[in-house]
Image (cartoon, rainbow, N blue to C red; front, side, top):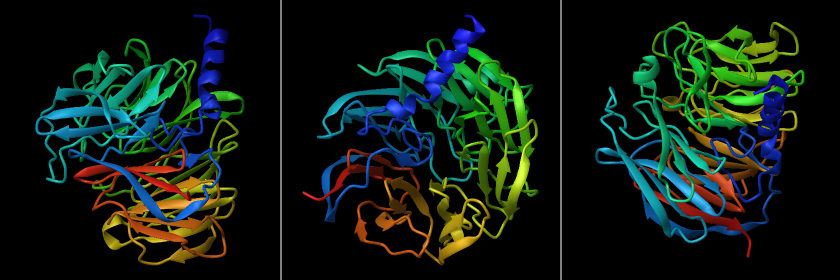
Length: 407
């Protein structure tokens, strides 16, 4: 394939999120890979209305919604199972399972961690033991598989493989954590063959994003060592910036956020946040520090020039915060809010606390002013999906669809 043609395909894939129907949330962090939905703020009902509830196996992988279907990747006994249902009714369309022998070293959960990705007529899943599998959207039948342990010698790390795949054009981007130059990689969508790979970095728990930086499609990987920017067309490293804790028992888990040529990273373990200008050959620090927004695992969201996210370790009841993008100044902080995940729907923050409470509040700099609270799930840490005014989430026993719209 000629380089110019390949570059055009990458650009088309990179901006494909702009053409995603408003009713879709087809991958981790939504259609634009930044925790936002292109839908306008829904006119909220006084109380969210349950639509359906289904049994769920173990795991931390949240649901996705695409083409009128919802998907959940989960574990039942000794199988990793991908379930596809009608998003409106919860009626099962198909299921496909593969055996797994993954065991969590710390006894937390033996289920998959990575959120599926739906693109190009395929559904991509990455299991806790490193099996990346492509299935047909129509019937769930396997099309190809890539075993990260066998293919590149990748290790499962502290808590298993957790990178949610990112599809850009003809590439599937994954943070593998393999040795000997297989830290990050791009696989071919149609075959699962490695197109390029680089770095010796361990994987951590962040998932990649893609952006056009200086007009060049770039994959952004937040590995255990820090940020790596890769030119998608060639697989060449464009830049890198170290950002990790000195202690061994630490991880980088939140995905990068991008605004123009600026990239925001955040981590916990006394590392904190950093805003980088990546317009040139070497990233330039705009601001950094552990006082602004130190996210343990959930990726913050951006609304205009405001950042919203969880500050502090999960086990220490982190604060919910609003931070200025340009300066890192804390605009407000809701102490002891607790851990959870969040997204942005129009100008509304949608948050799911770890105890299963759904909280909705305006994304403003003047303070935390929740307008809706409802107990929709039990204890969980999984990311959720927003599609067509509906919330889709899971806990340790169930996954649900909840209508947020006023009648």
